[in-house]
Image (tube, rainbow, N blue to C red; front, side, top):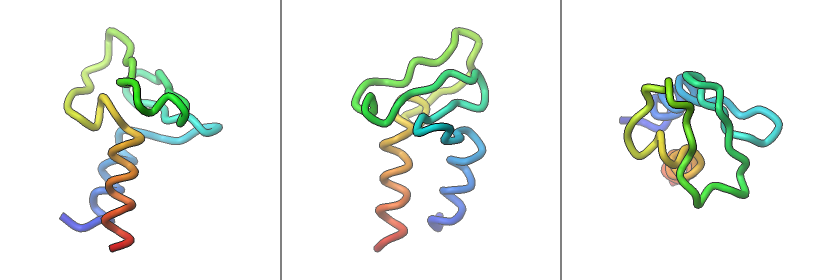
Length: 68
């Protein structure tokens, strides 16, 4: 899948607000400096998978691939 599509998928689940990754499902957030720790979703969240645990890492990987 191309990088543009991957960014669209990431952006459907996450937004960046004031330097924090915010889950669009549960509205919990994580600062960039906490990116090594798994993301802590609200109990009501249905998020799953590696991207749900490490959104900053997922974004980094997407952007790294886009750079080539």
